[in-house]
Amino acid sequence: MDQNWHRSEEYWIWKIRYLAAQKMGREIEESLKALKEEHIYLSSKGKEALEFWLIG
Image 1 (cartoon, one colour):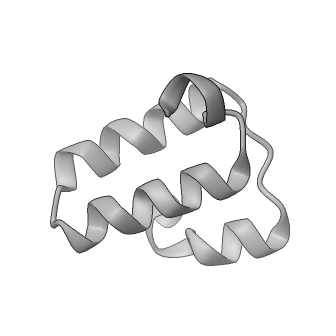
Image 2 (tube, helix red, strand yellow; image 1 turned 45 degrees about the vertical axis):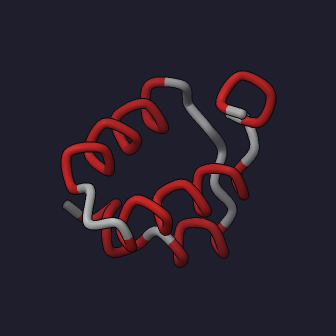
């Protein structure tokens, strides 16, 4: 799934939500780092959905 969908904003939002629900803090940090490194465009709606984690 990562290989086929990793450029999609929706993929990242769902991935972070899933990791948060599973209380996987280290994986959230790694995913956010990858999100920034891959320069994934986030719409204002996407930024709002991930605001809690993006602030840190």
